[in-house]
Structures are given as C-alpha cells and as structure tokens.
Length: 161
Image (cartoon, rainbow, N blue to C red; front, side, top):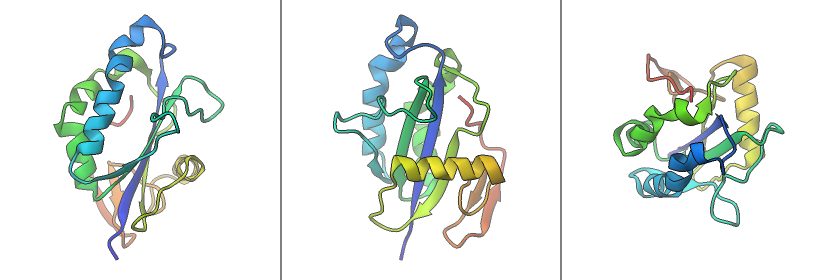
C-alpha cells in the first residue's frame, strides 16, 4: 500500500485579511491554491463549504491562516512550494505574516483516500511542538518515510512565514 503525505501549515497574519496591506495576498490566494490543486502530486486540499479555508479558526486566534493538503510525496510538495509561482509568494511571507513561535508546518503519512480533519492536523502540530520531529509529525527539514525511518535531516529553506 502506497501512503500519501498529509501536511498542515499555519501562518500568523500581520494584519486582518481585509486590510489593504494584505491585498496582494488576499487577491491571489485562490489562484495560488488552485495552482497547488493542479500541481503534479496534489491529491487533496481541505476547504470549507464556501470553497476556501481562510475562514477556519484554530488556536483561538483570528490571525492564523490554516492550510491542510495531501500529496503523493514529499518531492511533489517541495516542487510546488519552491519551484512554482508559489515560491514568489513564499519569498514575500514576511510582508504578510509574523514569525511564528512554533514550527508552522507538520507532515505525516496517511492511508490512500484518507482526508485528515482540522482536529487531526492540529493534533499533529501539537505533537511536533511538544515532542519535536518524529515519524508521527515531521518537517521538510527532518523527513521521515512511510516506514518510520528518518530519510533526511537537511537545511531545507525555513518554513517560518
């Protein structure tokens, strides 16, 4: 059975999403998400009934943007993040987001067809924050394989918004 890669990431906004200083992000977020949806290896992206995820609130903090996706592989996720138009938005992250106090990205392996919930994703982030990277919740800097073995411990670009 080939497992899929789930990933959750949070970003703490500097300003409310309707603030004019967030316009470049707000006006392009749907397009960049759609690019991810069409990217090779993207299996699924969490959305609410309204078709987005920007209205999901976690950590009792209205400044936090939530993103949850499933990918075929770590390589597919990396390709989208660092080698598509998403990379230009990633480089501008400090304009829109404050540096987080905790690692904002957690990844884990899921069974084919599994679609993690918001609660599942937040539990993985909590585990990462509490215990550090492991096969249960890891980062792009410290990747574990579906067999729970450490695959790489690298100096991948920082995920900090």
